[in-house]
Length: 91
Image (tube, rainbow, N blue to C red):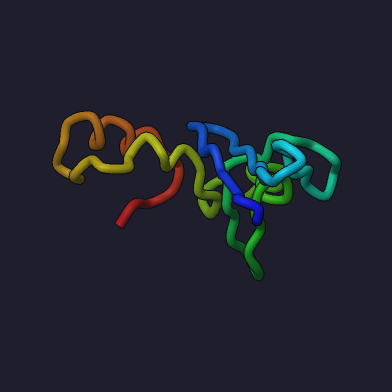
């Protein structure tokens, strides 16, 4: 039996599978271990490196740095400070 683990960092994530043979980090489509924590929306949805590639031109529709807000209510001063610096709208 294998177990899959995901390490969500503030900017990147790593996915690994642990089985009887040890732990193997799962590579993305570009053979990279790190995957950007981003989701972009345009005519379709882009995730990871694809969202990162379009983030500059599609910054208002690219969600990133969301981990900084997890667990904070909207009226928390730390959340308000983070939200004020984001290029996209938090609802």
